[in-house]
Image 1 (tube, rainbow, N blue to C red):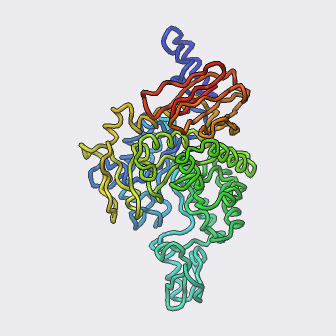
Image 2 (cartoon, rainbow, N blue to C red):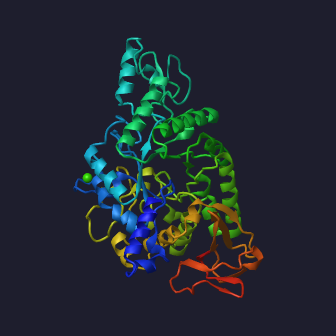
Image 3 (cartoon, protein in one colour):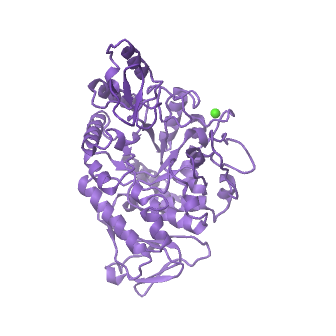
Length: 514
Ligand code: CA
């Protein structure tokens, strides 16, 4: 509210300048201070190397905040793990209170946070609570005690047993085994232990004190493998306890599972869960895009949003196309520019917080082993500035793709499409925040829905077909709507228009009506 008042005051004082005009268009957009954001997922190691040692780092991220905010249009970042770790991916943490020296220092981190906040961008970090590294001092001390058959303060941070339980357990002394479901290097933490829970709260508070706005929770289905009730209970405890300390902290959970389980997890109060069922090659978005079933897509979106809001009225869906564990979307979209643009328009304009995996906005490719999905950000194909070394064991390279520098200059590029979609979305807070209702259209290729927020309604219509289509607005009670924006695959397409109560929609396009 304060920011809005300030904008009004500035406009009043500059009434003879262009500011008065801009009140009517996108330029006067004021960030609403809630937890709705367009997030950009960053694998720091592969993003931008600021000091030339081949490893991406936090100063490299700071250097690219203007790119993320101004050229892509995202206003939040998720940093994949930044804490000290023996692995290249860093999902096995050795010290929950430090920055991995490969990535920089705590000073670098605080500078990054400050620069992000100066741009009104939120920063969330990965919090890996299912397991630690086997090199974490907690685990080493616990094991040292077991050799002497003595319990110490870390013994119950993990799940030790003196008999072999089955797969997922690793022998550690002459007598004991420990639970480690992902890998022997990643011992599972015992989240029932009250001392560990209090340590987890200390960790969350520590990073909040260093300026983070929230956390991405890794592997939440594995907290208590196969026990969704206990997983939900733990997340509820974490959510309630952390929000007692910082009421507006934002959580997004990685629950790579079914809609039914994700819906149940929303009862924990965790703000968002990644929308895995809509993501990737076989997910709801791409399946319906490929078969041009727009109506089915809108219905699925409406139904999913109704479901999650019925479990938590404040739920924020978190749609995405692919992430660091998935084949990159450009590959399963057949490197087809029009498909990539349509897929982007769809997930970025779904209700909630979309997550853009770094490089997705330029159509980077990568599939097969994990390192191939995490290749160096292609800032340029001519200039190596900022470009990192490839991750160990990657055996693919990116070919026939323009880098960021060339795509910024090409108005038809995927990068400029992302920028257009997110600029358009910013003009309509209803799209992220509103109550969604799918429209049952005359054309099955149209994915059409209304979003209503603060008594104001916008209509989003994606035409998934290669033909111009016409849809009667009167039938939907929307005859007083006007075209407020449009997005195309092909810049030569005619803009959408309303003729005699009918919306005329260009092939492979998106239209916003208000
Ligand atoms: Ca570096």
